[in-house]
Each structure stands twice: as C-alpha cells, then as structure tokens.
Length: 479
Ligand SMILES: Cc1cc2nc3c(=O)[nH]c(=O)nc-3n(C[C@H](O)[C@H](O)[C@H](O)COP(=O)(O)OP(=O)(O)OC[C@H]3O[C@@H](n4cnc5c(N)ncnc54)[C@H](O)[C@@H]3O)c2cc1C
Image (cartoon, rainbow, N blue to C red; front, side, top):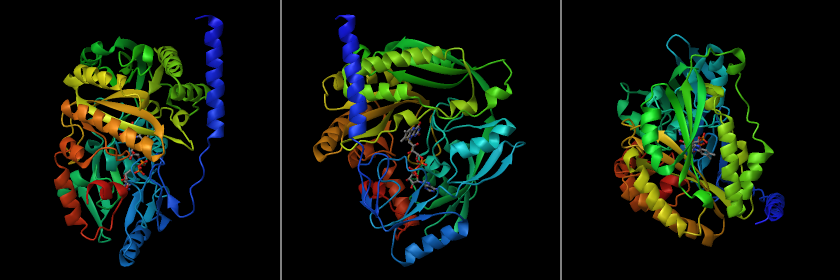
C-alpha cells in the first residue's frame, strides 16, 4: 500500500474519532438517579448524604434503619457493578471523610479516614519520604473502596493490600463503632476486607508504610511465550526489582503474542528533591486520541500498540519514585459516550498457567468478533491468605482487560455471553475473576471462582440480618 494511502486512512481515522467523540456526548442522568463509571446500571435512589464525621455517620445509619431504608457506601465510585448504591436506598458519599489523621515516621504507619484517596495520603507522607506498600496503579481511589475490594497494583513484594492493614474501625449495622484487627474482633477482619461494603462503614484505618525509594525504569519487549520465565528469573528472582507491569498486545498484527514489560529497579542513585515532587496527571491529547482510534478500527489498534512501544521504550533508563509509580495517568482513559460503554474485566490465573491460558484465550478471541478488547495489562498478585473473597489462591498473573460495547440490551447480552465464556476458560485454568465490575458472570461461575462465597454471604446475613447495608452486587449474587 502506498504511503499516501496509509496517511489518508490515518487522517480519516483521526477525523472520525474526534467527530464521533464530540457527537456522542452522553445525556446527563435524571434527578434522583445514580450510576457508576460503567453507566450500565442507572438506579433511582432515596438520597445521597455526605459523610463527614463519625457521630454524623452513626446518625445516618440509625436514621436510615429507623425509616426502613438501606444504606450503601460510596468512595470514589470507580467500581462498575452498582456496588455503591441500591434502589430506593440512602448512599453515604465518603469523599469528604478524608482526613489524614496521623503520620508516624518512626513506626512507618499512617492513620486515615476511609474516604481519603491514595493521593491524599501521598501528599501527607511524601515529605517524610514514605510511601504506601500496596495500591492500584493510580492514586485516584479511596482507601475504603480499595480495602473493600482488596485492590492490587504494581508492587510485587508486599503481598495483598489487606496484609498492609494494622487495624480499622467499623460502623456496624447496629450503629456501633468497633475496632477490628488480627487480634481484636479478628473474626471480621477477613470478611470486611474484600467485603464490598456489606458489613458496615470502614471509618479509620491504620496502614503500614515503606520508604519512598527511587527506582530505575527498565523496559523490554518479549514474545508472550517467553514472558513467564523472564518474569520469574529477571523480575521475581531479582531482588532489585520492586515493581512491575506488563502490557500484552491486542493489536491484530501481534494478537496476544507480544508483551512489553516495565520493571522498577532499585538504584544506587540518590533521590533528589526534584525526583520527590509528586507528578500530576497530564494525560495528553495524543494517548487519548490513540486509544480513541483503537476503539473504532484494527488499524487504530495497530497504531496504538506501536505508539505504546515508542512511549514505553522512551522511558527506559528514567528514574521514578515509588510514590510516582503509584500515580500513573488515568485521565486519558476517561470515556463518555451516549451509545457505548467502556468496562473493565480482570482475570487471574496461576503463574504456571500463563502460556496455555493465553493460547486458549487467543484461540477463543480470534473467533469472537463481538468483543472489542482495547487493552490488556498484566500484574503479578501474590497469594492472599487474609480475605475470604480471595482472588489469589496462589501466586497469580492478573489480566486487566479494557472492553468497549454498546449500552443497548442486545450488546450487553452479547458481551455477557463472550465474557462468561472467557471466565469459563479462566476457571478451567484454575483461575478467578475480579468482583468490582459489572455482573456479567453467573452465580455458578462465582461459586467456582470463589469457593467461600456461601460462607461469605452467610456471615453477611448473620452480621446484618436486617440488611441495613445493601448494594446491587449483593442483590445480584447474595440473595
Ligand atoms: C480505571 C480503573 C482502573 C482500575 N485499576 C485497578 C487496579 O489497578 N487494581 C485494582 O485492584 N482495581 C482497579 N480498579 C478497580 C477499583 O480498584 C475498585 O473499584 C476500587 O474499589 C475503587 O475504589 P473506589 O474508591 O472508587 O471504590 P468505590 O467504587 O466507591 O467502592 C467500592 C466498594 O467499596 C465499598 N466501600 C467504599 N468505601 C467504603 C468504606 N469506607 N467502608 C466500607 N465499604 C466501602 C463500596 O460500597 C463498594 O462496594 C480500577 C477501576 C477503574 C475504573
């Protein structure tokens, strides 16, 4: 194909992408309605109440209970399955319950209110040269929301997020505040963490911290088949490697056969004041446009993958602090569209299953034309022994999948069928899937992926028999 034709196609794709984005702005929600970032579950609620103080939160719960209303808990509302609201219920919005109450540089701990985001904490601990042990890749999420899903990210050395919690206080369905740790009310620890807001409001939390180290960025391109051995030897087996993320290609030219690995390595270079500055999200127009192009065409996906190659290898040899690795860009992914939604799915498989699993997923997706997969990143998640709804039964690779599909009933049904099939393949490889997303999976799949599901919901029914704390997730799977 001539160069002019390729440039012409690219320009047309750019024009179409910009035009499509501007033309399809979504309509605002009707008053009294709420939804989450997936926009697939708009729901009429009673009211949203801002939580600001513990005593006020106690009153909100007691009043709702008296009025026979349910209570749902909302942090930053990035979950996508109606986890933060329930029909006709009261939603407690914890964004303003966000004080960082105490930083202890000697014991390396921090006490925070649960509505604080990782970003709020980073601002408070960065001057002490301290950092969080485990967070998602971005700092935009709330502590309460992250603990309630037991989130994970780029760290490969500090186990699960739950394992970094010393204690927390919980506002119970009775309106009482209790302290929970591995020694106090310890039976609740493993239910509330990863408990999706079903046991009460997590109020204050003490988290363990670590040093805000400086890392040297190391990048590599690999064939998919080489990746697990490379990871085991050069990343996990190399004590200098502290954090890691992988990207696997969804571009037709390299469909699931190429991985970009990014490692964050210990360095002897001293951390400078300018290194320490917390970076802001300056997601540029270019990645947004490239991701936008990949939404609409195969050529767009190939271009996006090539641009990622340029970007990833351009950062090879750069230095970045631990705090900044935990603040990666997210704004370029934001998506508002009248007809379509952008959703996440996440699948986990044991480390040794990586190659056969990817082979099976590739075989399946090559014939599955209905699922528009935009991006897949790879994380490493260590075995978690602390939570009941545990997605890492052993050391796992996590595949975070960004998908776009229509919002109409037919498109949702078709996505559900495809995602259920993908989930079955995952389960066949002794894997699990992540629960903070849209309820595509069936209850049967949940029971297979989470063998302690019934025990989890039984504890919920015992602890909260009047169903004070409710959300759409519980309605879908727990009732
Ligand atoms: C773009 C994007 C990227 C993501 N990346 C990652 C990732 O890298 N790793 C990962 O693990 N996950 C990731 N997720 C999922 C995300 O981590 C979870 O949805 C997390 O819960 C988000 O925090 P939040 O403050 O938005 O929680 P919310 O969505 O507000 O709440 C999540 C759950 O926690 C409950 N909850 C919130 N606050 C409290 C509280 N104080 N007490 C009790 N229950 C509470 C809610 O009721 C709800 O059930 C991502 C999601 C998106 C949209």
